[in-house]
Length: 387
Ligand code: GAF
Image (cartoon, rainbow, N blue to C red; front, side, top):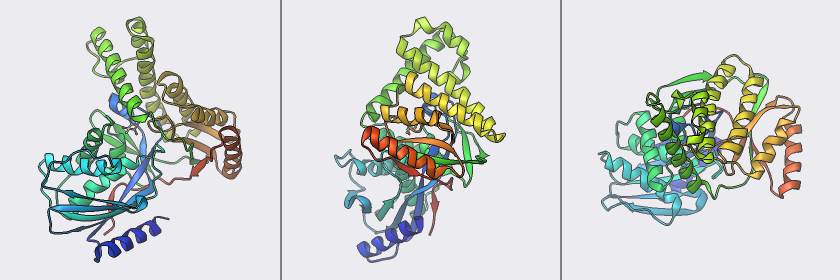
């Protein structure tokens, strides 16, 4: 599937610019096994890069402006690299404008380039197509102009670009897009950016995403609100326990003593974060021990918290996870990514995938009149140069 995407992208480049690309870059989307909304709370997360990618073709054009073509949108834009970079009403272009601005603001010097890109990462499904776009652009510009940028810095620049666009995201998506490794999940410490790889061996279970086909319209505003609510909660915790620097230092018992110092909403958010940080540790141990039943149980618990305490679910995602709980062949399921729509991640007993898919697609269509999509993802390498 990716071979066709790569061929189409390079052929489109040749047709548009009359030359073969000097660099071809692949940049992946990501899944997250567990640890949702934990990156900006300085805890651990457990993501991985996947085989759904954006393919970019680049060449230098020896001018001061860049022309970028998005094949899938049938749109293009040109940007003068000597002018001030401002947000545009064409939202997709802002991720690229943001990346160019971050590179320039951080002292990286480069000239004009032509770029064509195309993607098979579904947009708005919680698979981080925007992080793949940011990291792939930075990686491509760096390769083309021989800029020395470390992987972790590519991720940080991508994150800053996303903040400039308006989402105050954490580092997980960009970090996993650049650091992905075939068949490995990344246990990332979002405070220090230290990380270790763990084998993504799910034993007798297949990892399958169910795409609710509900797009998150509330995403940006609610995401930024959750982040503020966590900051408020943490300020109260620190006030009472000055030794605590972030939620990872706070036990559930300590938090419970402060329940009446916080609004009910702030307490629920903080409680979710404290429990989810703990679940990531347990989930990573369960994975290492090959205990996928326990891992799956932790996913169900995480969904309960995301839905009832963090309140980032929706009726479609809740229905998918609640149905999964009573299914004989699913050991774990939860909403994945920022929430308010997008995908659930599921561990399904191998050999029963089609049966489960048929059951869920019929039920989902009958209940919501929406088609459910399935992605059998493979855990793959991070942002890389093909040419
Ligand atoms: C989005 C954000 F971009 C990530 O930083 C992360 O917070 C995630 O939501 C929730 O875990 O994908």
